Length: 177
Length: 157
Image 1 (cartoon, one colour):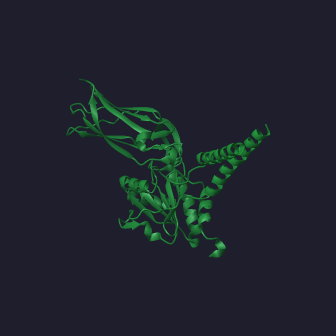
Image 2: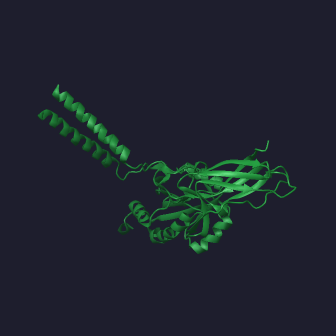
Image 3: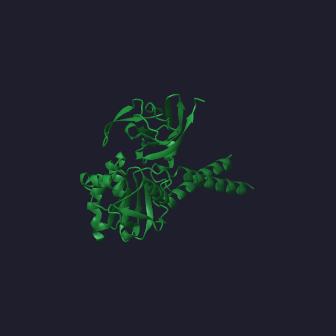
């Protein structure tokens, strides 16, 4: 009887240890993978742009559109963060799945203080799919390390607290600047 | 013998614990960082079923998945064939009124949707349509405007 109790107790401890070890080993880690090469977007002036232009910065790419209410809701927070964290190396870029004229008309009202790109829905859906957005919805964001690794992805809005936590966790401490 | 059983049981328990953790732990890689692993693609969320003509009326129907909606004002139709085919203003049912933060007061559709189309007297009955629509998931994700070409099924014959 004692040996059965011993086995049961040992099993419970072992299962908890297995669970705990897995959690410990995976906590806080994200499968960082390189940004696919050769992704081309267009500026509102029609000039081609690649994400490589922002190498060396912590890059937050936020796909949005003027017809996307959750996107428009999220942008004021991004504007605030671009201002707050620019000196520490954050660069936000906003590719719009939209018509350039529609995008231009919203830049002033939204006060966007970071580069905005644009592209047809088909080309943007293709790019987003390569970046891991299977459903093709918006808003969609990726966080890219200064050396070009995708650190995080988010389909749907970030909460302000999530954004701050995410950015702070990948920028050097303010005192280190 | 007892020791072997004990070792095997502990080993199995360790594996069970790890597997349980794997199942419970939210995946951060792939496209599943936010709600994406639960979201449908646009064609699954907004299934454009058919365009059926019966007499002088043409009905276009959708099946909208639970948790998704289409904007009434973003639904549009264009007759592509035969040449010269035209459509009158589509008859869409009254939608569910919502107050959208950026769209203002607007209407949406959930569930089954049927649009009723007619064409001007003397004009040819449309045989092929371009159907445009746009919608969102209640989870806070919107899909780019969709545009599909669809052949009209004539039920009159």
